[in-house]
Structures are given as C-alpha cells and as structure tokens.
Image (cartoon, rainbow, N blue to C red; front, side):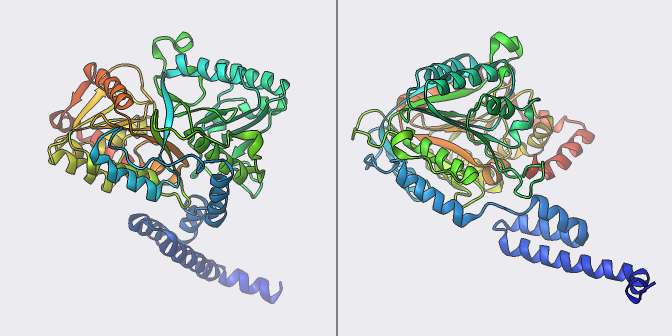
Length: 484
C-alpha cells in the first residue's frame, strides 16, 4: 500500500468532511451573492449549510440560473430591431381607449415591457380547443410564407397529430416552418411529438435541454409561452397547450376549458420577436426579416392598443409581477382574477389585500377541482389571507378551467401564459399581453362573471372546518410551492 493510499484509508472521513465544507462554502457564497430574493437566498444557504455536500449538489441542479443574461439581452435587442417591433408608432396615451387611471400603468409598461404599446390591433377571444384549434389549423392551411409555433406542451394525440399533419402540408407547399417545444413539456406524452415532427422533417427544437448531453432537461427553467405566428400577420397566444383534452368532442363532459386569443396588427411583430429570441437562444439560428415578418405596420389610431409583456429568469425577471402590482394599485372599482394556480407571493398578496381594503371589489375565481392536486393543497394553505382582507374567492363547480385572465375596472385586461404562482413569476419564460380596450375588457369580465354565477364562494368558516391533519398537509406542501 502506498503512502497516499495509507493516508486516504486513515483520514478519508476528514478529507470528505473538509471537501464537503469547501464545496458547501462555495455554493453558499454563490447563493448569497446571486439571489435577489432574500427568502430564496436564506433558504438555499440554509439547505447548503445543513448538508454541505448534498445541499450543494441540490443547489447546483435546481438553484442556479443557467441562462446567460448577457446573451439573452443581446438576443432580445437584436430581435426587437430585426422584427419590426419598434417600427409602428407607439401610442401616446390610453385615456380615450380605457380610462385615465391607466396612464400611469402605460408608463410602467413603457419602462419594464421593452415593447411599445401599439394601437391598430384586433383581438378575438377563442374558447377552449373547440374554437382555438380549428382557428389555428385554418391559419396554417392558408399560410403562404412562414409559420412559427412555440408551446409548452405539444401532445402526440389526435389533436396534436392533426396539427403536425397541417404543418407537414404547409412544408410541402414551400412554407418555411420553425417549431419550438419546451423540453419538460415535450415529455407529457409518449412518444413525444418532437419525434413525429422530425420524422416529417419539420424544423423543430427543444427549449432548455441540458448542454452537458444528459437526457434530463433543466426542469426548473421552462418555456411556458404559447405562440403561433403565420406569415408574420396573424398571431395566436394565451394559456392553451396543444392537447386533445381541451376538445369537448373528444374529452366529453370532462374537457378542460381555456381561453386563447387571435391577434392581427402590429402586436404580431412582438410575438414574432419573442419567438425569434427564443429560437436563436436555442438553435443559434437568426431568422431573416424579409421571410418571417411583416416589416411595416400602417400607423393607426383605431383598433385595440396592446403590448406583449415578456418575463423570465433573465433580465426580464419580474416583468409580469411588476405589471400586476401596478395594475392592482391603479384599480378604482373592480378587480377580476381567474387563474388555475393562485399562489401569489407576499408582495402580490399585499397588493390584492390593499386593493380590497381600499374598497375595490376583488373577485378571484379558482378551480373547484384542480388538475394539480398538490397545487390545490398549497393554494388552500394561504387563500385565507385574501379572504380576510375582503376579497371574494369563488370555486368553480364546472370542469377544470385553465384560463389566465385579469381585468381592471372593465377597461384594462391582462391575458397570456402566466399563472399567479412562484414558478410563473420567477422561473418560467412567460408571454402575456396587456390590452387597453373597454370592449374587450368588458367581454372578458362578462366571461368571468358567468363563471362566478355557477361557482361556490369560499369562506373563512369553510377553511376553519378543514381537519387539522389536512391543514398541516396543506401547509407542508405550501412550503414547497416555489417548485410545484
């Protein structure tokens, strides 16, 4: 036995202890220096110090933001410049379209949104897969130049195959196509849709796969965006994935409900810019302007003023969070929120509670039966905080509704892919649209009110009647809510 082997055999516990301390110290310093949320920093440092080796390993896997911010920023700026997002004239004020209190909200969007607020848009609400998928298929069948599609989940089922076949037909017509699917979302179906797309030779990629070559993707950083842009002129976005469970003819009375939107006008260039940014980050390919987007949009004071709001764990972190804080602060009469997953952080809880205490009527519509049981448990662990402040919380008694809708004073609407939970607000790449239009805001408000008519109001007495064991279970799961 050599001297080194003798040393190792006698002192390996000491060596392992010192090594784990060194690794833990480096990880703890990294967490303290890079985390902007003090609670996240304290939590990670605590986990690392309690178990220096395994805590550090867990932090390396789940706690580090591997998105290179400088690269993301450069791609964002190039995408905005290349895809005409700034070429339409920005709207000077919104009072004529919505209400005076939203002028300050427009200023907030100007400062954090990176896109200008543009008028001249049209927007159509689409209900569930029964309206959304046929509209998307019709647009794809009529495509002449280009199609880009980005989604979180693209299931290999009847609706997914139908869409893939439409893309294949467009490809054979000479249409240029790019499809981007989140790496985690692609695993929701077996076999994954990415295999069928590649078999059909449709250019496609998975967002945020592991650069080390391992099969496991970065499960903590996901693209939750849903975008379809056809010929650079018509765009779809919202919260709906591509799954047959959204179609009543297939899923029957158990069909999941959702709300999606079809846009035409200069905001489509913003949707295209977001896709181009994500595609270049994933594949290093820059999409040429002349082939992929309408470069000039006519100046117009008509139509709906709208703006895309990007957010994600890069330099856009907190954009959706800040927009919601601003919107709740300017509300004067009524706030309506419909969300499948409602786990606001302390800042949003405070903003919602303060609005209710100012005398604003706050209605929050949640699923009576959630598709994610753990999320439902966590929601019940903190929902009393908004009820005690005077908010009305409603549990939908119909089938699960995946819609993400917010309206303020029947004059401003916020729609898109963001849930009101830690994942959407800090970890996911999201895309939302703020809309300054009384007519569309009223249409969305009416839809939420219709949900309320058939819903059951949740009260403090009902929460207090929950058995202690279930309350404890809910609180324990709530502690893990940032990773649900």
